[in-house]
Each structure stands twice: as structure tokens, then as C-alpha cells.
Image (cartoon, rainbow, N blue to C red):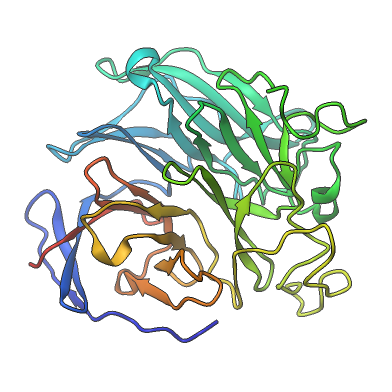
Length: 375
């Protein structure tokens, strides 16, 4: 990985009011301020916008809260799903239905406990009464199979496309060879209708023994997923092993190679499989990272309020504790901007707000907002 430029930071110790500025950085002639909006929570795994003034966020420990952007008040919601919180498992991503104003549906991905000490990735939905701060009965629209006793590589981000289909990733659960098997959900991207029904134009409908929910395969542990409304492209970012994190353009029925091809190595330092990086019939990533940044989310910033971010992939980095930016154009060779290093926090999720600003969450239980301007 290239040793890329780090933007100057100014730490500000001001904790007097809501939306506390904690950092300023510059890019060329432009200045940006990082504001802390809330803290004191668990690992904030997923962040989404209900409307211009209200965020909903998940905590890995199983809690779901809203954050009022006018007042800074966080509110714990009632009637929450039962999750398995251990290792990398817990309450994971959150999304609101594209027609939330009409149907009030909220979706979550989570680690679901099954029998005999096994657990798996599941997707559930429930209606949220915003005024009452409570969900109605949760229903699973998808439960990955098989389940395992391991507690890592669940995935899993969730997005909707322009036609209302829902996409999400399931990790390989540490069973890497299963990512190439179409008769299991491990290491796959899944595509469903919003109620869990299976679209009949999914790529493996009619393929003997293949699971019909599968959209693409050969993934390791996808923790970034973004549907680009401007282009209609679906982008995915996943953890490699020791090196080999990837950004992929996900397309119908394609094989993304894990564990047959990878730019990473085993944690022991040995090669993965035969040590191949290419093979006919398997897709190359748009970009790979060696060494790993441990990516935790993915956004293509299409706004106009943050010039530095425009038309770039933006992702959180867990291991290297920064916000990572890389241009869509010539992404394979483009230099990276590594921001927020001075926070010393594992960046877990990143979203473009309805106001055109960028919001990030961290494993330290905080949500930040990035805006143009100076202190």
C-alpha cells in the first residue's frame, strides 16, 4: 500500500455544546470541521437516516436508538430483536425502506442464535412508530444456512436499489471453501424482494442445487455495500485475510474468487490455496489493499458540499483507524486520502446525510459529522 499524504489536523478541546467541534483539517484551500454529535454508546455498527432531522443507529450489543439532529438527543427504542452478541456477531446494519414515509419499515441484519449453539446471519424487518419510539413484531425475511458455532465473518451491510430490491452480504463464517459453493449462503451477495420473496430473474434460478437467493459469490467477509443511484452500480467492499481487502463492482451471477484467487495471505504468512491472484471466470477487484485497512463500510459520495469527497469511495477503516478516500476514476492506482487519524478510533460506518454532509460512527460509541468550514 502506498504511503499517502496525511492532512494536517488541529485538535480542539471544546465540550460545551451539542455538535462539538473536535477536529479541523485542510485539503488545498478548503477547510473541514469534524463535529461530535453523540457519544457514550456501544459499538455503533449501522447508521441510517429516517428523515432530514432523525438518524437511526444500531449498537452491536442489540440496542437501537434514534438521534435527533436538531437537539442532539438520543432515544432508546423499544421492542428490539433478539441477537447473538459475541465475537463479531451482534446487531449489525440498519436500513429504512425507500417508502418508509408510507410503510414505516426498518430492516436490520444481525447474528441469529439457532439450536445446538449455532448462529447465522439473518435479516429482519419491523414497523417503527417514531412517535412512540417502538417497533412492532419483528419478522425474519432471510436466515442464512447453514449455521455455525464460529463467531466471525457474518457480513453484513444492506441496501435497496432503485427498483426496491434489497441486497445484503453474508460472510464465509470462516469456512472459506464454502464461498465457491452455490448450495450454501456463505460468502454470497443476496438479492430479494423487500418482503423476502425471491425474484425470478435471480441468476441461479433453475440451477440444480443452487440457492435461488444468491446474486453473486466468492466473497469473504463483506462489510461495505453501496448502491450508486447515479450509475445503477452496486459496489461491495470486503475484508481480505492478511492483505487483500477488496472493492468490487458486483454484477449478476459473477464469481469474485475467494478463496481461489486473492491478493492476501493467510494470517500465518503462508499463501491462500495455490497463491493465485487471477483465474479465468473469476472477477478482479476494482481495487485491493495490501496491507489491509480492515474496511467496515462503503460510500460513493455524490454530494457537492464536501469538495474533497466528491466522486470518491469513502470507507471506514478498523485496523488503521481512519476514514479512507479513493477516487472512482482510475481507482486501482489512485492515491488514498487518510482522514480522522487523530481520533484514534475504529471507524465503523459512513453515510452521506440527506443534507449532503458525511456522517461516521465509531467503535467507541460516537457519531461524527464532517462539514466544510473552519472553527
